[in-house]
Image (cartoon, rainbow, N blue to C red):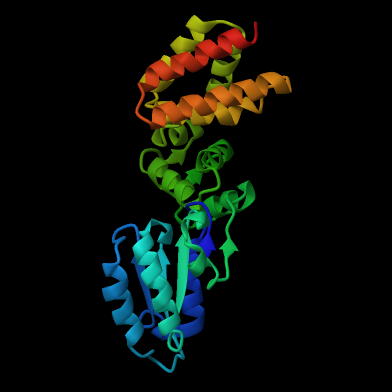
Length: 277
């Protein structure tokens, strides 16, 4: 079972294993099912069982069933899958991928070797972006690469999507285009917003937040996330930092639950303006 955040190579690893084991016959001995599309017990009773019953091809000793986003399966489907995994061990192996292993029932976890994937570091993302830009003849600045690393947050898929989208608009990919195409504010703008609010200047910080949300197209949830990331780059006493993180968590929860995001952002900035006095 592969567990980890999106875009870190769980699916690519499963496909690579199939290529390594089965060679030219990998496509006949490997099937991929996205559990988030069909989450009920029927997917186990029909598609999974029908594939597991057939014999391997090309001299292989077993086949592989890859269940992507397995944490989206219902409890009934997971219970049925547990029995299926036992029944077809002679000619079938299962690879499950999920974002949260805690959503997989314990009987299935005990039948699997769990491999935990962590978000990718800055270096591998930077190297891959440079490599793809080179073979695709894309001109990209160092600052744009740093911007892609920043917006990807360890997600290679997000990084490559940002590179592709930005390269469609300009001959040379610049950092401003990366931030614009991904609806992400420049880190310096977020830091300026934070500094202004913490200095007690609520009106100016409110105006800056308004510009970020209207002109840059940031949602309230995105803005809260970037404020949280930038908070640790500002020197603050631990007591104030803890209080700010507490209110940021509360604001993020309210927005997720459907509260008015602009009102919640202003409430956050108002709290920041008060806390430093």
